[in-house]
Length: 113
Ligand SMILES: [Zn+2]
Image 1 (cartoon, rainbow, N blue to C red):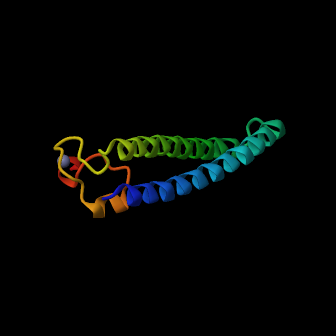
Image 2: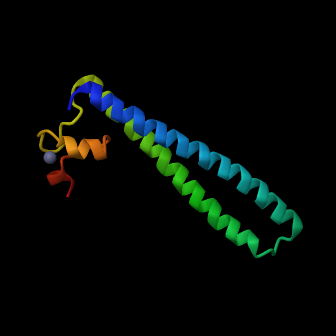
């Protein structure tokens, strides 16, 4: 896969991740708000535990998105250094179909499984 296509795929993925992170940040804000209200109303409000469950979920998704952004940054470095699309284990090229589906892949399908 050439650097132009790789960069286009990474740009597209990064936009999707940023969009997800913005939504998650907004969700986290409204949850923080709801939780503050719930705590103020009644500390034993059963809704309090539901909110912390949602909070944990939003937090986990946000962490995954941040990790994905790091992966995208690392993939851009591989594009710059000419090692993008080269399996880090066996050194063979990673199939274009795999990179199209997962542009941050570091390993070929054989080494990944
Ligand atoms: Zn491999």
